[in-house]
Length: 83
Image (cartoon, rainbow, N blue to C red; front, side):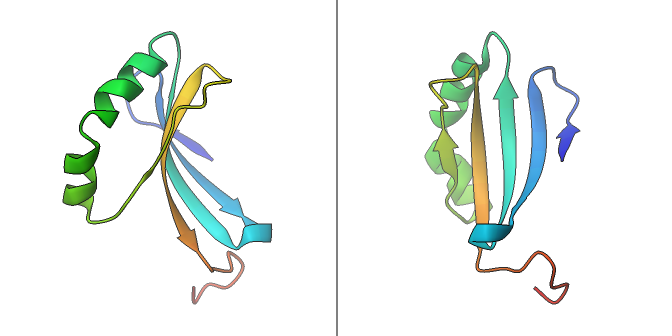
C-alpha cells in the first residue's frame, strides 16, 4: 500500500513480506529528481537516524528511477494481531 504525503514524487509505503516474517515501512522517492532528493536526505542520515532512534535502510535503487528509505520489523507474523 502506498500513501501520498503531499509532495510530488514522495510516497509512504507499507509492505508485508510474509515469507521473511517482516513488515516494511518506506519513504519512496520517484521521478526525474529522485536521485538528487535522495542524496540530499542521505547527507543528513546520521541526524535523521539519531532523531528517530533507529537505523534505516538507504536504498538508491540504481537500476530504477527511484530510491527508498526503509525500516524493517523482523520476526513478526502479519497474520497474528498480537505481534
